[in-house]
Amino acid sequence: MRGVAMALDRSLVIDEEALCMVKEKCAKYSLSVHPESELSAPRVKMATIPQGTTPIANPIGTAPGVRVDVDGVVLISLPGVPAEMEAIFDVYVAPLLREAAGGVVFYQKSVFVSQIMESVLAPLIDEVMAANPLVYIKSHPQGKDNEPRLELHFSTTGKPCEKPQERLDKASDALVTFIINSGGKVNVCY
Image (cartoon, rainbow, N blue to C red):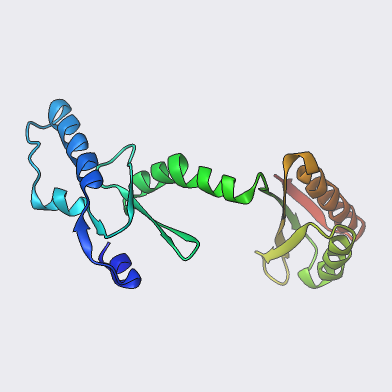
């Protein structure tokens, strides 16, 4: 949190709401696992956050995350334990992102191909993207010159009512047809 406080030019303070969150977790922990529930210095440190920020409850751990609104931007800082970070992200951050996106969702699909060089495929990709302007296609070479293999990554965004999955399918089907007609092989689509 020190880095966040420095970046925001704010003092670190023991936040009462964050301290309550830590106390509750420590009390639960002492009942189920360990008889010690005192607020040690490391536990108080978990409740020490930049002044004027809002603590975010941690559903599976003790240290809260932090939210701060700065000049119309929402900054979220999460604890470093991966499982805790993921849990807070799923419960708190993902819903914020969905709301900010206004119902727009990211869709993606990959197709793995072989026996066709990326240089041969490039104009075909350009042609399919021109015919499907809302779909982006990125090629990722994975083989060698004498054994060409590629992952083709298709992506688009849209509200479900705009049928973005159909857009992806149309673009990938068109490119797969081009690949097969050009002597390439489609190994996997997902």
